[in-house]
Length: 140
Image (cartoon, rainbow, N blue to C red; front, side):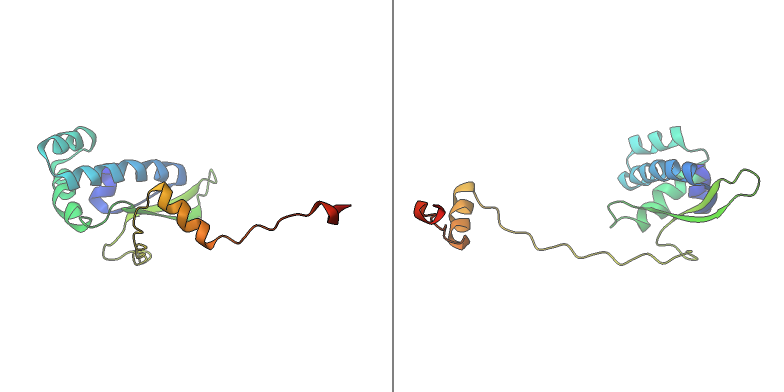
């Protein structure tokens, strides 16, 4: 199924199979991004077809070179007639003829400087409110 997903870039299958194929397809794209001989041999041991391996290491590796993960999308479609299995499309994102457009990447929050524990403790004491002292006479 991973070979067919790489070849066609979108397949329809059951939801359970699609979830498993998503995990394996993301690993294959990671191998394609590595681009080493060892990664090519590991991918060739898993997927079938020279055209699929070539597509992994050229087209998909170039397409996802700036992305750190999440190369596939799972879209639930229908309930299959006959056995009532939930069906879903699994497809690669950032390609033409997508079923749904991908969301823009969220900006990363600015990095805060690292503070040692003593400085952090001192800074937290500056902003903490003063403790109120309880009087024993007011409780009686």
